[in-house]
Length: 315
Image (tube, rainbow, N blue to C red):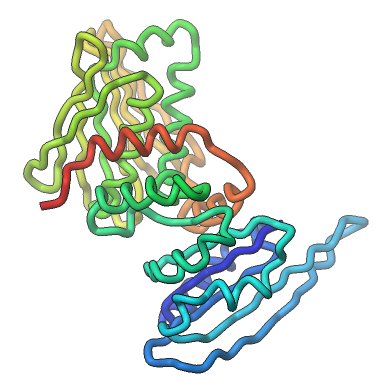
């Protein structure tokens, strides 16, 4: 039960529509797709309603899709176009994958949730600051944050047994490996650990090959923080390593069919296994983003605050 308002460049409308088709069962009940065409002065629209008959005695689902062709001149007053055609009694989420800040500003008064992707912005510091600014007014669902979910789940599960719980407070190194344009995802993962373990983050320093190095203060000791880029094609993380000074470490890396986990014990014993089904893929990430519009994740805000502290100010 959701209004999803999507504002896109008209030349990319087909690609965005295909992505929305792949969200599976998380389709919004009413999707309003606004295609922005430079120089256009007139507004055209079409509406499609579809009904899916379920097998057996299940309840059918009606989906409504509105497509609006408009120009850049209409963005500053887009609220007056969208407000009459949204279902006012259900939440409204907006997604502007190609920027269009004028549209966001106009729609903010009628918006409950903003869907964004901090990995798209070339400067991760700028992207995270924008997310923090929006979070003061509405609930933010960040696809860069959702890309870290499988990694956060596996790390949390690793330290869930009571026998390993004490290792959390001994972590001395966190290394996140990421696709070259996904520094925001890596910073959010490091920020999540920092916020949950009460570390005090400091600004990381740029090094060769897009690496960021620095520390977080954990009481009277320092935790080494490393964010390294890789040649992975898809957005998100490629690997994560956490280690403690006595030799225990855990490394998770992308592999066919899931994640490859490698653990080294304090006595030097090493073990390797496969974590199946760890990645949702980009289609699954977007579907989860739509689903999150009806949920609330209390850990994103604190992780975002720490991630901003880790990211250096762009030169």
